[in-house]
Length: 155
Image (cartoon, rainbow, N blue to C red; front, side, top):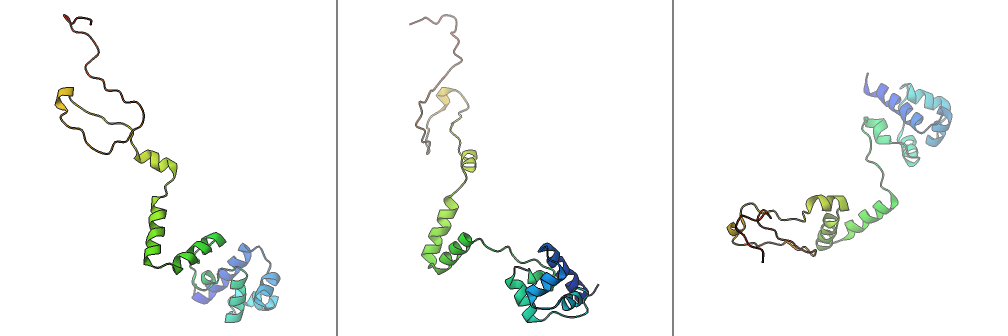
């Protein structure tokens, strides 16, 4: 299959994706149904005016021409964020990236946070404890097995 044949097939695919018949789709591009049929049969090459009109109507013209889909269009709020970001200087962009990097869903934060410290060995082996453990709940330290040895007296 040559490039011209596949262009016609992709044009028909886009028409079907938009759920339009050949008359309606041709009208989007400003051509007659006869011309639309010739485009889809690859018997005629679409011109720039036709393709521009289709692009303005939401047709993926990049796909029609190359077989590669365009990147998804941005939602209005995404476009606003991107335009604002592009107007920032280097310091402002760094701040935005830092803000975005610091935002994590709660589930991710919980998975990365551990609210316990584990020590292995006997109590006498622990000489020094240091670090950034900031727990606000009541802490309990237990040592020994909890069983009294023979000869131990109750206080």
